[in-house]
Every structure is written in C-alpha cells, then in structure tokens.
Length: 249
Image (cartoon, rainbow, N blue to C red; front, side):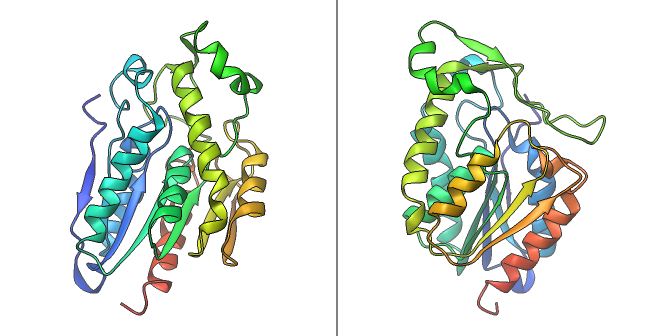
C-alpha cells in the first residue's frame, strides 16, 4: 500500500516547539489521518504520524503482530517528538485514540485529542476472540464507516481475529490506567458510529482522571470522522485546543 506512509513535519514559526503525535486506527493507515496531520503542520505545529506495525501491508501480517508493537512504534514517535519540543500532545482515531491515551498514562503530555476512541467493540463476537482466533482466521472488514460519499480510508478487506484479540488486550490495559491521565482531553464523538459503541465513551468518561474532558459531538460524520463531513471542525478545534494548552508558546 504505497499511499500508507508515515508523515513528519518539523513545524515552523512560534509553534515549532509544540508537537503533536498522531495515530491512525486498527486495520487502517496514515491515509485516514493525513488531512489532520497536514492541517496541523500548516498551522506551524511539529507533527509525527507513524505507520503502525502490521498496517498498510496485508491483514495476514497484521495477524502476526501484538498490541505492544503498535504501542511501541507510536511511543517511539512520541518520544522522538518530545526530545525536540517544549510541549507535546497526543491524538488519534479509534484505536489510535486508545494509543494516545495509553501514552498519556505513561508520559507527561500537554493534552490529548481523540476521535471516537475504542475501549469496546460493537461486534458481540469480539469477547470470544481468545478462542475464536484458533478457529477463524479473519472476518469481514470494519473499514470505511464514512458518511461522505466516494471517500475510502483504504483499510483491509478482512480483519484478522488474532489481531482483534490483541486490540481487546490493549483496550483492557489502557482502560485500567485511565485514572492516571491528568492532562486535558478533547473528545470528538460521532453521533452515528457503527464501529465503536457508546459504551466506549462511557468507559472513558467514568474512568478518566482529568477534570478537563470536553466532548464535541459530530452530527454529520460516521466512525472515520477525520475523512468525513466534520473533518474541518476536528482540524480547527483541535488546533485551538493545542494552542490553548501550550503554555503561551
């Protein structure tokens, strides 16, 4: 998948010392996030958007990866950005939002911006993946939940069950540590989301440690809102959020 490339920008002007580490979601790639990343880069922020292991290639390769590898690559990108910036934010879509919050549990961050973060899965079969992964290699795709016609994120056509099991492990360990997140959180939530159920939002709201949790409803987008009708709203309001919490830089 040649279009599934990592993206970095050194930033410019007064915001060059303010970094944003962005993560794409499960079975997706930077394709779903490049619009957001490029908007922030144009605003002057230093930006990093890695390609997570097992993504942007084949679902068979994703089936061989573990959640620790996804987190490790995103954490590495975050730490590289933190080494050259005064303040760093994390951001992500779906599983990328879960990773962004996991980093905020483990490292000091200035804030977190997430779009439809995943702490639960709509498909009821997901709870049985510990067993199903030995019986069923893959299921139908979950990608392209986008209201805007003619737009595709280029996600895999199949979802490896073994990787869903790893996703559930990531969700569990991150949910357990949410109380340690003290940085402000900006949550964008689609009112119609056929991938991540409302229980995911409840988990975040009930367990997050910060008292600064702002929820912005997205009325005209589905799950992949970063490529949907409300994308400009996400881009603009997140940039305002990052500026607000950058200690006057």
